[in-house]
Length: 148
Image: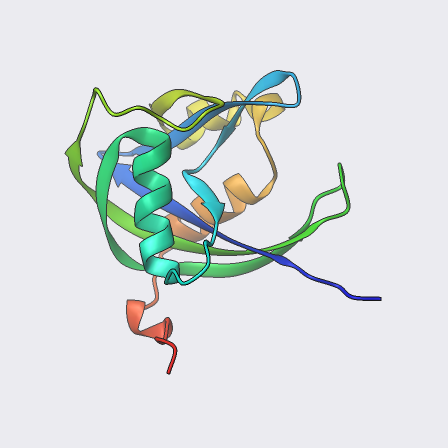
């Protein structure tokens, strides 16, 4: 039996105590997530984080570090995801950017505002990544090594 985890990236972008979140339509309802998505073929993890953030929020970002590497098995479908979560700073917003299908829009929320909407989280990874970020878990981008 072959087991293939899905490689995903996520980005924590914080500005004055607010964190950039994505509202997306998933499973018949709107849910909140970090800008996140799957690694594409022949793409670096850092490039994937930049691309996914732009596609889901309309924001150009500059990754500044690695928050953590997480393994998560979704109870809804049993799929295992390996998530590499980056920190990044917002560089430029493109308000007219056409967001990915299913994306309702981007929201800047405080941790408390996010906690108040717990029933709308896409997964528990959201708060784990944010709490690790807020606790100062910031590793150098050099942790991500280029392929040979």
